[in-house]
Length: 413
Ligand SMILES: NC(=O)C1=CN([C@@H]2O[C@H](COP(=O)(O)OP(=O)(O)OC[C@H]3O[C@@H](n4cnc5c(N)ncnc54)[C@H](OP(=O)(O)O)[C@@H]3O)[C@@H](O)[C@H]2O)C=CC1
Ligand SMILES: CC(C)CCC[C@@H](C)[C@H]1CC[C@H]2C3=CC=C4C[C@@H](O)CC[C@]4(C)[C@H]3CC[C@]12C
Image 1: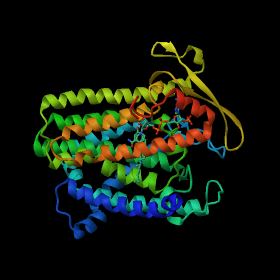
Image 2: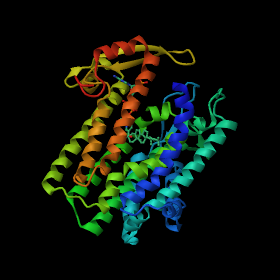
Image 3: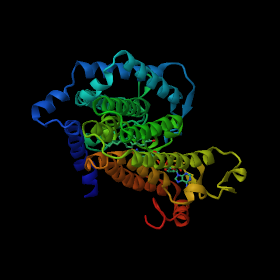
Image 4: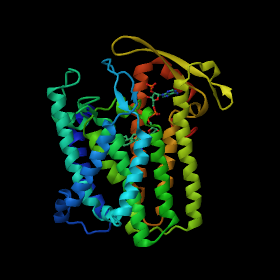
């Protein structure tokens, strides 16, 4: 029954639900009346949306093609070491500068982006669905590694087939996730903030919402190299879930509180907004600190001298066999934030999302949709991640779980 649900029922349901919901969210968020004619015509995009997406995608591709230092991800089970362009932070700031310059030249660019959001999402949707089809065909006929794929075809389209597909020498996951999805998120929220200033005047609440997300995204680019070691890159294949998700779902849903606040002007006082801004910054800093503690520890050569919170770190040395049968060793950190709970980064990820949505308090539940979605996504991810670690580390993982008993919040969960 579980397999039927996972392989046959969920993929078509998710494909239908998520793909069609994008247009409904876009119309609802801007207060427009929802009608079938509007949904269909917006889904096709317009000349503005196609030009904008073309320019932005070309820009993202150029940044993956120009000479730059490279960084590697972990070796795959079929002994391939993927390499990535290591110019994330430069790409982030250059894109921001180019965008601000464009607004100085085309004074209403941000307003046009806001007003054409349904069409932009329609365009991205068509491109993403087509790209996933291309990835599916490539995986079926020219797979990176020959594997038995006894799964329903729609499941393969949804999950993807290849782990690290490249088209024209470009790593598709770096392009869709890091370069189009996340930078799209940044430029959209900035456009929504500026559109809000034009339409409703400056508000500290809207600024808080935009600033916290921008800080989060800037830190992502600072940390981009570490992202290539996460589940998305090492476990999830390039298909609808990841590629459509980053090309369409991130621009639509991750930005939703900012989009919503343009038509539904914030009602929060400046003093409350300032308090939210300070606590939000703290949550983002702590989330990054958790990610960094693991990164520093894993990078440290001499672990006896590696100190966290004033004392030398404690850890478990976990031996395991890779899928090719090679003996490998890894270390599970027991000190610092990784000794508090097993996924403290998720706790602060959720709190960060809550704090950048809070400026919209008083305008209904809608701006909190992303927070609710993230909560479900991260709980599901905890189980996926722990299943992976348990398979990989066996008894060592059990020992880690017995020493660090809680997943998100100590003594609660
Ligand atoms: N906004 C969003 O939609 C989402 C954001 N995120 C964010 O992305 C970032 C990365 O998340 P994600 O990759 O899911 O998870 P983590 O960064 O928590 O990485 C989990 C992996 O870390 C290793 N690990 C687990 N415990 C320890 C330990 N005690 N010591 C050392 N290594 C350990 C294991 O991998 P191994 O041992 O094999 O290296 C495990 O699979 C986080 O900041 C998260 O908040 C994540 C999901 C969604
Ligand atoms: C059903 C689908 C439509 C759901 C799609 C989900 C994906 C879009 C997201 C799944 C995991 C997400 C991410 C993981 C980790 C990240 C690191 C963080 O610092 C920035 C955000 C992100 C890249 C994030 C982006 C969306 C997902 C890939």
